[in-house]
Length: 178
Length: 443
Image (cartoon, rainbow over all chains, first blue to last red):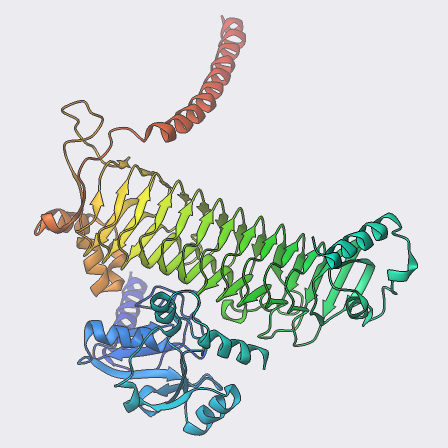
């Protein structure tokens, strides 16, 4: 009989510990789990790659996205008031970087999961190097992104200008052949 | 027919007749033998590759027909494509390719038009076949699989697509088998392509469209992918007669997913045993008719979808038939829901009671995903029944069918009848024999 009480006590204290654990809010970046994570906007799987982004709200809820453009879309839909942290990834090292401290290379020809054409880096030198290697693109900071048009480049170009818009894919070909 | 083409034809006929001619043969073991053969061939010539193993990479920069005599294996260890095609009207048949480098460049890169690839067998650690600004090409009867020998524990994101189209129009992809890759067939900014009679297994998405117009996805089969057909940011797409089953191994899997899809047609598809049969979000003006949605966890799920037309669909054996949120403005009528009990007062085969889809659970789960634990719990069902506000805003089937659509019903009942009939007869026989033998002897 006594051992039963002891067991119960242990069980209760475990639950208590767990509950205390829940109380602490952690706003750090969370790893991507390819098996379960899907983009909160476009429903695609979030790949554990350099394009993954995430934002964390006051409540500690984590929203992951496959493309920084989808994260922007989330902010348009839900507002920014509750957001504590936004993270993007360094394209080279894959480490999580605070989105406001990252640098971005942008060109309509850059491939990304939802074709927003933005690639993120932890510092401006690696972003510049990327642009140098590709031979196209502009360097953007977080504040530049606030005035960004967020066109899904290829899509919009494609849908609006018909099927034979050449300039962008010629650029793309040039890149692919490097 | 141009002179050169005639010449090419004559040469190839001559060649086929005298196929032992040593002139065109090179040593099977020579690493550059294959490329040398290509380089020395005249445009529009047919070359026959003798059996053996060759080393890539190859570049084909003139119109050629390449056929094989026996087993021809092209092994590529380089970071370049195993075969890169830069000239129009290249035709390759019957080659096996093993491309073992994990890289960004495809195993076969096509940057030309009117190319035909058939009966190929590709084992790739990258993209299988990539079409880049390439139109009017045909890829058929080919098998593309992930090269597992070198990269056994690859994550999905390490893998590349089976057939990948970028800015490539009017191509035909038919009768291919693709397995264990990222997306089986991926089309981006590519229009009027035909994807027909392909089979795609154990990949991320079976067929994945992004920014396409006029794509036709017909008669394909997919299973154990995360999603059978992922139709995103498209217009005028036709998805018909496909069979997507057992897309249920991922928590996010669906038979067919529509996101930002407009003015497209989805008919005669069968989605069976998936987590979600049809998932429709932010899509409008689509026609979804005469599909069979069977044994899925959720039959159809609509989120912020409007002005779609859904009718003559069969919902059978799904755990939840439908879920909808913010999707009032759709035209849904005349579907058969096997969990719905309707009343037909005027005998027209349609229920006078409407089937309204309660958005309560979806809305709760959206706010608190952990509440999925309370799925179908008595409390949740009770709350759902309490929640009747804004009923006119719910997605509603205005006249559900009392019986499954006629042609679908036939298949079902005939299957059921023969099966049960035989079983019944057999059991009757067993019973009679038992009673007759044992029962008589005891008395």
